[in-house]
Amino acid sequence: MTTKTRDTLIEAVPDLPSVRIVREFDAPRDEVFRAWTEPELVARWLGPKELEMHLDTWDARTGGSYRYTAVRDGREIAEFYGSFHEVRPPSRIVQTFGYVGMPDAVSLEIGTFDDLGRGRTRVTSLSIVDTLESRDAMPASGMEVGIVEGYEKLDALLA
Image (tube, rainbow, N blue to C red; front, side, top):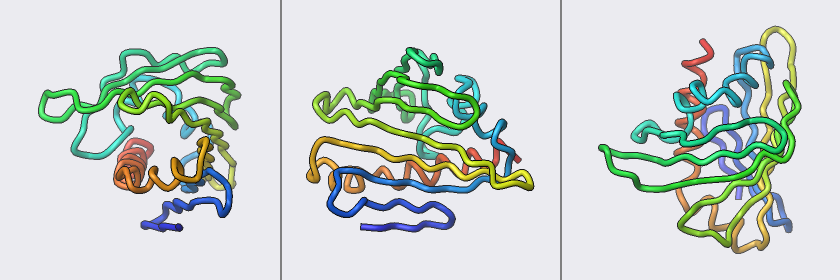
């Protein structure tokens, strides 16, 4: 499965329980990385346009953790959590990702931030899960909308 919406590539890695997401941004790597790690900035772009993200914890440092809630019309609809295994400014973030509704489906996410020069940055995120079935459930969950719309909000934030 491969989906490309505007500039966002979302693809299942053949024969591996993983999904790769690739997106380029018209902003320097330091600014993109900062938007990924500072809680007040993350809350402004994370997730679909119709939802607000309330960050309870966002401690983006090696050994840190996070927990946030997706809210629609004042009602909590989903809760997420994870740990930051490695945060290496401005080039790499390794973290876990969990959804409270499916506590056995934790993924490992490896994010790399590549400086493309001329004020552009490519972010590649590789999500690794435990089974091919879990991998195939990721796109079926509607993740594409949240990713694409979140990145559009990030474009506006970085402009």
